[in-house]
Image (cartoon, rainbow, N blue to C red):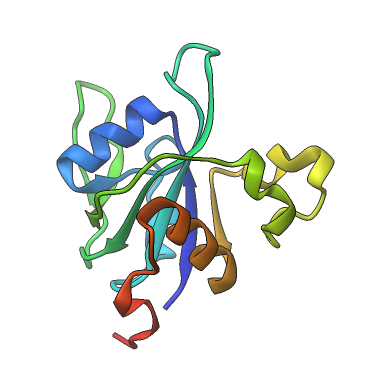
Length: 147
């Protein structure tokens, strides 16, 4: 079992949560293929809206990978991103700044945004548990089960 961060605007994350899917890196298939059923993903949203600069800087969704397939989905003619099915949990948005000193995947605390530059990254279970506890009030019970 692995633990991931995906990066997307809150607006885009909300679409995924409503539809039970994730897209990463503007619809690329490869990041989705790195994940397996039973893995977990937390979304970090640097902005509220994709095409605007209003900062969000919060963890905005958490879910378990349930779909074994990475599949294309035509959002509109000429744009066919790839998706993967996720079971999202009801969670609270959590600001990142109060957690910066505790998150091990953020190496340079002064340049913390650098960690998110590729749009998808694996994080250690300790970081996942810290963020999940803040978002859910607890750690999901099945995160230690082997699938």
